[in-house]
Length: 163
Image 1 (spheres, helix red, strand yellow):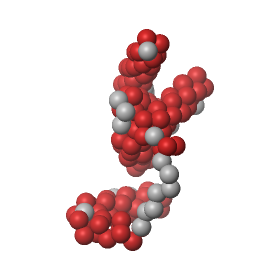
Image 2 (cartoon, helix red, strand yellow):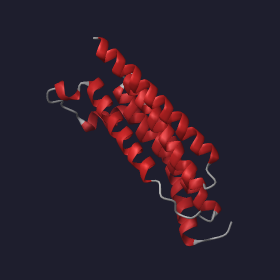
Image 3 (cartoon, one colour):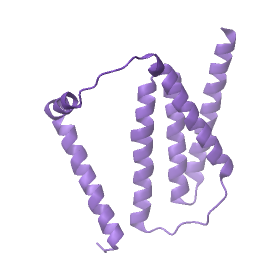
């Protein structure tokens, strides 16, 4: 029992330090692309802490929705502003650390949800679609409008039109 507590405190400390270093990189980065990547690393650290609390599904959604959306938004904004990219710098150590943390977050999420312990689950997609359309029509409308706006902006950027 004592070893589990030591490992948990060690993991919490390591993830917290990772978040702090990533946040400092995001603040100090001169290039917006590196700042966006560091922001994504902060989000992965937060997802790791959420997974350590036992909320694996929330951690997985945090990675997919918040981290993915934030990095995509910042990168897309940089492309729209046509900022000149900085010179490529070797960041192999940070990339390896980020990959290890992501793997750890997924392992913690899978362990905390007990996915391996579940039997087969029947999911009727027609029923899921009916519930989403009937009960969550307004958020669905907002998602559609947001995606259409992003698609239009992407087409404008790709065509190189001036506003």
